[in-house]
Length: 538
Image (spheres, rainbow, N blue to C red):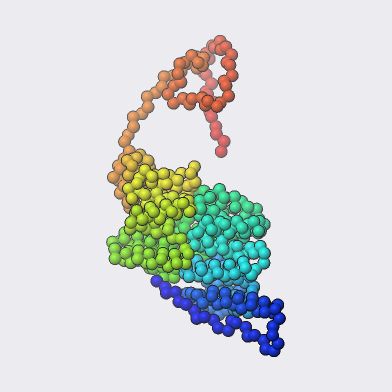
């Protein structure tokens, strides 16, 4: 686990007072503003964490810096060396120009991206201070600062706060396309999938390009449109303008391939992402996932460990621990679980909401009652699909299956918002149904989880197979008895009550039109015409 260091306080920030006559009131006010800005800058820079695994690069020329600044402003992936150079450049600029509100916004957004990409939460308080300074010193309607605060809240998993800032940015600049991706992320995080789709439609009306395709893929996946999501991400990667963008979207395509259960294709995407940008650490963890499914266990363990050394995300620690647990490496698994707890504490200190991953961990490897308490609170704040699934599972693990079923259904039923086809979600639902002795639905959902992705978890995929074997084959049902044929010439209304299975007339339907007296039946022909076939439009 990396150690977050502190940079020394930068000196020379306070300007020297002029000699000679005393300053005028206006000059004093200007000097006070400069000093105040420098004090803020010093407070931000003093806590700047270092990233030991990123070599300090030489400062790039104006071209790369401008490109990095534009990408940060648009919320696009930036190469880590360019990001570090941009941060150094803006810090140096703000020493001389501490009242430059736009540069404070750029610096704050760069801190957010650095903290997110390296899983270093100490960047987030610095980002917040820089962005709020931008609001105070920048122009009226400072959309860049509002965008930065929305990105910061989303990076902290505080999607309610992110939505607040994103909506303010949209209100200030409804025709600026860069404000909508952040609104999509925050709407998804709070479970407002209609809001995310509406924001996507507005985004698509303003701009066309790879970044929009990448955001569309996220919305499509949440709606259950798996093929559309995969096509959108691969098109985004093909149209990427930088290797870092291409790597990010290839890694996303690898995740979607993994969710479909395609181990080989997933691995190819992750390998291509790492060739494009070796700092795409999420692709390293995805590579470990795919390699484990392919039974290339030593390579999988190595990929996970490398990912954790560069981006110590608690989710990766949970995945690696469960892989080690499935291999009988109990001591190593416990080390990863200890790392998870330590990372959660560190991220919580940086304002990150890790209740979801901690709740899942506690449900399976710790205290299920604690998991229920945590996830109930998370559901109150952010009732998304992932939280519904996690809370349902925690309730099941705590023995509260009746309530668990309600949340598991929300996570998997399209009519209740759960359009995602997730093998883990469906497995959770099947096990909850099994606990309630709903054997038919349990059998169906456990089998479906393995159809979606037979390798979805090194722990739970084997558990699904064992549960299915224990349930056995469904009992054979007798064939239904054939119904008595009805004389087609017999007038309606003379047949008594409707036959079994007939649909009753809806009480709100229009009254039936009175029937004319039946005409005499024609003489039967030798070969009656077959009944017309019913067709359905597609």
